[in-house]
Image (cartoon, rainbow, N blue to C red; front, side, top):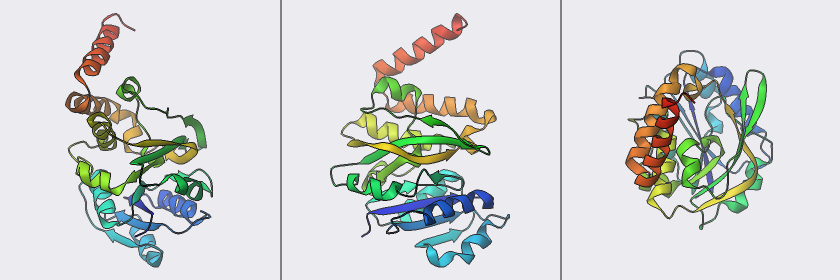
Length: 243
C-alpha cells in the first residue's frame, strides 16, 4: 500500500489539467498513486488523459453527477493511506511539497493540512492561511482549502465520502462533520501546500449565495447548537443594522 494517492477531477478544462499534471510531474518525490476522473469531457481533456494514461494508476472518462461524485469515484479507486484532491487547474506550490509532507502522514494523523495560495489567470495573488489549532468560531466562517489537505482514506470511508446533496460545499461538510463529531486528529504543515484556482465552481460570483446556504445547512446539522445560534444570530443582527 502506498502512502499517498492524488485524485484529479476534470471536466472540459484541458488547459487546467495540463497545469496540474505539469505540477505533479515536477515533484521531487514520485512515489504517489494518481487517479484521474474525467466527466466525459469534449474539449480534448479526455484525449490528453488517454495519451498519458500509462502515467496514471487508474483513470476513467465517463459522465458523473458533479465534482463530488467524481471525487468519490477517485478516492474509492485508491488504496493509499492518505488522499490529496488536486483537481484540474490546481497545482502544488513547489517541487518539494510532497517530500516535505510525507513525515507528517503518520498513523496518528487524520488530516495534515498546510496553507494555500489563491490563483487566477494572473497567477498567485493571495495566501489563504489556516490556523492551528482550528476552533469552532473560525470554522463557522472559514474553510480549509481541500487542495492543502492530506486526508486519511479511512476517514473518508468513515464519513461516507462526500455528501453529493451539496453541490459546492461538500468538502466543507466532510471536514465540519469530522471536526464537530470530535476526535479529529489534525496536524498543521508549516508551509503552503496547494495553489487553488479561484476560477473554479465554488469561487464563481453566481455561486456565492448557494455556498452560503449550503454552509448554513451543514452547520445546522453538525455544529454545536451554541455556536450555530451565536454565529447566525450575530450575522442576522448585523444585517438588521446594515453592517
